[in-house]
Image (cartoon, rainbow, N blue to C red; front, top):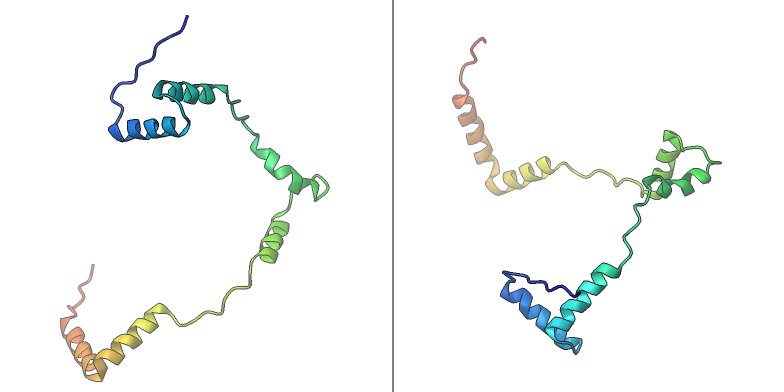
Length: 124
């Protein structure tokens, strides 16, 4: 015996999209919902793959034994590009930009105020 389903509180936007999908498939809304339910229930459940299966080809390449840390590091280094030459520190670039903008007078004033603001250190 057929069963009737009722879905309450369907947002207007979702209902409109379902109607558009039904029209695009030349179906009524009821027919589209039935097709969606049929498709959702007829799929085979995804097999839970054993995570170890992904690593078996790599182990087979080494005669069935697991890779050593050194072998893994060597493979990663072979695939990775050479590291870029280090450029100047971002702190140095920002300081240079600041110094260029404000000049030596600002630096001198900054040193004077920072020396005056330092509190005396107390023993703990």
